[in-house]
Image: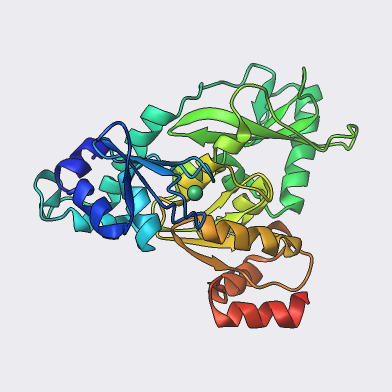
Length: 331
Ligand SMILES: [Zn+2]
């Protein structure tokens, strides 16, 4: 379902005029201005192109790129609930339609319009760590790579599932390669120095921006996702729960949009990242929870059992319990 289908089944113009007490006209009658609910604006900085269902705030640059996401932000409800508001309409309301796939399609449509990337491939100098090449000089490295992966709790089957490679020549020589896919295309990778020869532990290829993607996004099927920082955390924690990685402690708008496709996001970032987690909690419309940890470990350093328990104990970031935890542990 695309934006157009949604607008055909939902009276967006009435929604805007009922929702906002002050609607300022502009020179174009299809374009109105209202006070932006995101930045507590009082001067009508939020422009809404009614027929297209597209809002944009000149002040805070809020740009949901979709009427569905906009309503979900304004009302504080999930995308599914917004779609249900258009439910009196036709086409996508029949019982045999899976809400999951509607949301997927919706997000996909927007991606097609808003987002472009190029697909890449690994050259001959990249070899899978799962199979030996038969060339002793290369196999020596593959075995070393396997030892390293095993020290991070990644066995052969998991390495195979995540397509882990080793690069023996060129710019990424001596590095373990963790490929990142989007819609089945290889879009970027993380190259981790195996021997500690480089002063840059991690490298990634030129081309697509890493921050446009979430690592392991393709394999997530359900509506809850755990968000960790690093790819090794994601691989390790995926054995416990559906997990994606943000490649660090910040989220791009594009990554936020991807996360908005889930009903629930569980932040499992490092101990020092709670302030960022709270900031993103305000910008992500999914229900956001946080794992409560009190030591400096990340997911890859914990056992699966420990990770499972931590995830079970995660709590909504808006809750009193979360505030209590902060007072008690984070000063
Ligand atoms: Zn604003």
